[in-house]
Length: 267
Length: 267
Image (cartoon, rainbow over all chains, first blue to last red; front, side, top):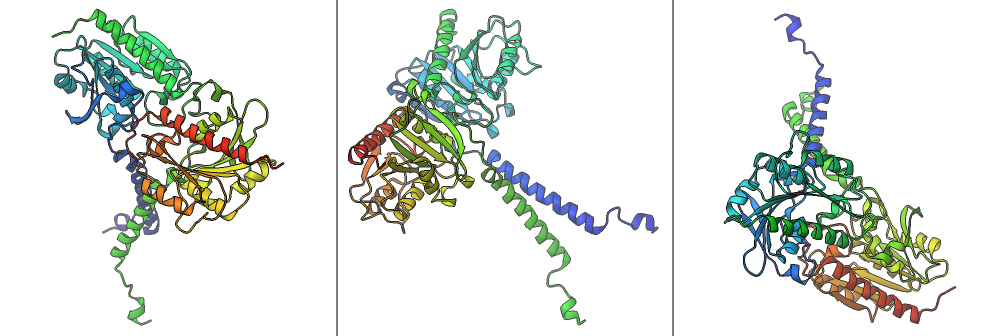
């Protein structure tokens, strides 16, 4: 063997330091990733009650292509199905308050738990949920933040299959457009949102169907759409969470009512 | 040299594996510890508004032996100073809602940020805060969870210096007793708390001053005392956060009013 090939490029000491550093870094990455890889438990009812009516809803944890929170009116079947995609790294129960509030108005809401709580891992999850839960009723797809972007993506790929789309602090990705679809769409913008920039949400209107309505929730922030606590980098709200939730609920209820007036049940 | 001493106990291969494993583990520990060592920013007003009156309070971020949120009535000086110790790993702004609500009733609240957000790192922090802020007015010390335990410990070591003590989902440590002190004390227990076990909170009454009052907040959970979101392992609430906050506020307001009736200003 010639010396050229037997001589290592790096001295053993340097190699040891490099391998040691890489191991330290790998361990650090694992430690940082652990809370993302191992999500907190899915606990129905964690912080979901608003008033006596919302306490009445029937909430069950089911499995339809993965875990899903199913929230139904206490009395009789719902007229309409809402499929809700949570925001990134947010557990489904953070939006149970909305499902419970809508149940009092005859709406069924199903909120899937995505792998890693990232809707981007399965943006077409709505398909199996609609097949299982819709039973001929009109379906509205909704989502918060990353979940809203994925809801818009699903809607873009399934023209004519939804009765409505609700985006909360969200907008379609730059390469996704629903322009030209006749899909009734509501876009909710929290006035002091600093996570989904208001300009980006407004800009997203250009890629939503004609007639998409933007409703501003006064004084609200990004983290007020779900009950998961404050969010780093978010703005400072100037109203109570309860008031913001009331405004969101009124906007969504009005949108659904207009929808039901225009869309007869498809049974 | 004899071979006995020059021969390593472990082969180089085994040593390399051990060192590598230790580095991986150390990195993992650093990754896990990072969110605890580097706390989220202290943001006044993050989720602190309840109604129009609470929006009026003056809130400033000051430094008195470390950062402290100072919450004062908009009109004129307060009659009473409340020093509040946050729960473990909870940022001070999670309790700003309480300070703002009390400000509308003429109470000043100061909430220190502890190193690592652990009151156990500086249980006597109240001393400097009282010296700086009390200015002859009666002082009530309060705390949530770990912060409550540390508040009780401070009270035990400073008999006669406080006008009152408020524990929220908290109790004195087993080796701390305020028995025999004539300190008016209120202990708040969340009915469905599963973090501070209700039995432990009730049991703690035996180490509180005679006449300490226990008030149960119906339907509430551990995480309803502060606005920091849901807490892993906590119980399931049966009331809204807003209703629980109202019940807490009424209990504290009633306690402070009784106190002020009994304790003239010490100026």
